[in-house]
Length: 218
Image (cartoon, rainbow, N blue to C red; front, top):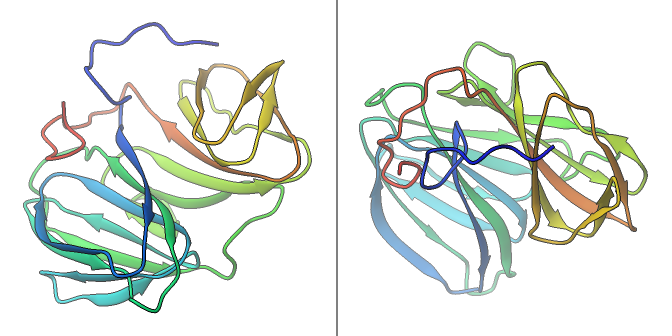
């Protein structure tokens, strides 16, 4: 079902913004600040070199994802090795439940880049046992599919489905690479045309979230 228009200028509950990136070898993004954003670096190919004011210097890849809980403030920079491959990724800005928490940076090494034909939880709130923690009542799932699966579904939750790659059919509506769908209070049947890579956000409009993020706010 389509949601009614909401009052925010952009974003949907705990999800503030998604930036899709295609970065070439040699790209350098200099040190810059973030504040009151929960930032998931969701890399699908290539290697990204991350350095930050917390003292971290690590490679982010399709098996090592990163969550920056910017809180009261953090600085970071990113680069792509000159001899590396193109990086394809999403920079996902989530909204924290409260402002100015102590900043932190998390990394998690997954066993595989993709979870095939079932949902894998990538991130969730701090009171859940998940790989990457979000200071918000939200969850992030992904899946690579080549057969029919059902969308996640829980009462009183809002879902934002993003097609990273491929084509899917939902009740006769075709979604292509870069398309998205919002649904709630129903279960959806996802039919891929070949292989499709999906990212799914579970949000809660009834739980608190800040609109003061440097990038996730409005």
